[in-house]
Amino acid sequence: MTIDATAPGLWPSAQPESARPESAWPEPARPRIIMCAPDHFEVSYTINPWMRPDEWESRRAELSGAAAAGWSALRNRLHQLGAAVELVAPHPGLPDLVFTANAAVVLDGKALVARFRHPERRPEEPHFRRFFDGLASRGLLDAVHDMPPGLCLEGAGDCVHDAGRGVFFLGHGFRSDREAAAVVADLFGEEVEPLELVDPRFYHMDTALCPLSGGEVLYVPGAFSAEGRGRLRERIGADRLIAVPEADAVRLAANAVNLGRDVVLAEASDDLKAALAERGYRVHEVPIRSFGLSGGSAFCLTLRLDRRSVRAAAAAPETVAEVAVQPALLD
Ligand SMILES: NC(=O)NCCC[C@H](N)C(=O)O
Image (cartoon, rainbow, N blue to C red; front, top):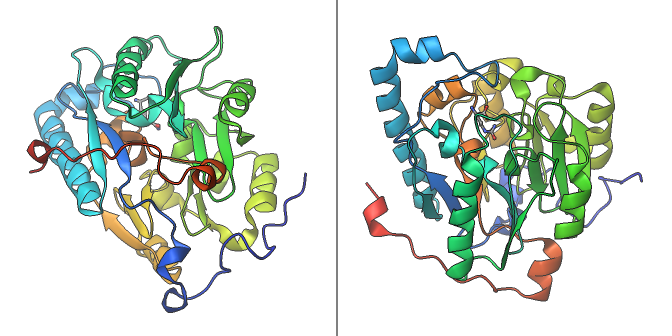
């Protein structure tokens, strides 16, 4: 199917910031975000090209301290931007549990718990399952589902939702199975666009693609096959695709958290900041570079609990209970 991304009606067309009303960046009043403190974060194995346990070991004290401070800065910035944060309990021996984006795909009150490719991360699955069951028992989720046997899907890290277009972009080739697309489509009733990832540095979709609430999409062109780039141009429209420069891509700048017109990331070049500012976005840098040594950044450290499809939002404007921010979590 060919989608005419330039057709009127979906988003206001590219306009200078002053011409774009607040409604051009649709966002719920209080986004809800799942995070996990990095108490046991370390780089003790290698399952992606960024992970160098030797370097971690030789700089352990410095890097652990930086991770703790950076994670708190991220959480506090998200809170300042209006988000409520739910915490997964850290667990010894599960260093990557901090990357909650990989815990599940969550939409419309349903969670599809991840199945990991690598045995190193498999023990996280029951931990996340219990966490989501707990959310369901508190009324914060309607249902929790598992992946069918034999299929891998590493949560929102590889299944990135574009709310405005009503589509999940599913990354396959390194971690998640292309066949998981049918599971996601059946469960959530949203279209799924599988895209092959071809550069091992961008092994998860969220390292290479970030839909923004105003309709633009940040992407790392070299992470995709020529066919994938063509699909993205067709679906998103060349005028709304923002290519992340290589220097930013390798700092995992595409791994950004977007809340309305705010974009939170580890660091961005002046060029990338200018490209975002031109379109009316506000960039917030947080000092989370030490997570880059595990191959993760801002988006990976978060998971939205409140994402809703346009369809569900129109049918029932407010169905999930408000989560109070726990004051004890704030610095
Ligand atoms: N990209 C993500 O969604 N998460 C970062 C995961 C990093 C972790 N060390 C991994 O390789 O699975």
